[in-house]
Amino acid sequence: MATDKRPAPSRRTGGRVTPKGGPTKKSAESAHDGPAASTRYTPRSETLHAPSPAWLPVVMIALFLFGLFVIFLHYVDLFLPGAASNWWLLGGLGFILGGIIAATQYR
Image (tube, rainbow, N blue to C red; front, side, top):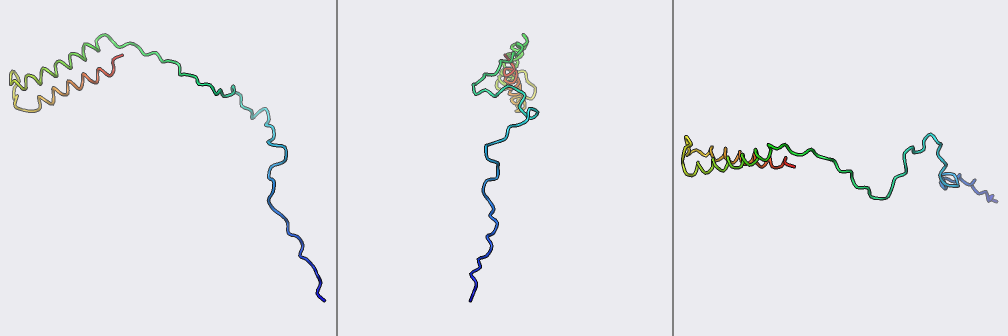
């Protein structure tokens, strides 16, 4: 007759990994020292910019006008040596660009 031996139950794995009762309390050393984070919106503090120097708008307008004047003289072919060259146009546009860059620095 055959014996009705069952194999020994295998060890079960799995189940709870952390101890019952939730997370453990942290020690006072590892606690957050700062104030608790707020959920309210806090707007940025305004940074004060120094006012622009008085000469900046003068330089800006001078660069615009000088660039326009150079382009005008190029087209009417007056007073510019080698006025047939397109370098005068490029120079006039460069002065206008300088005026635009100066305008971005104005506060």
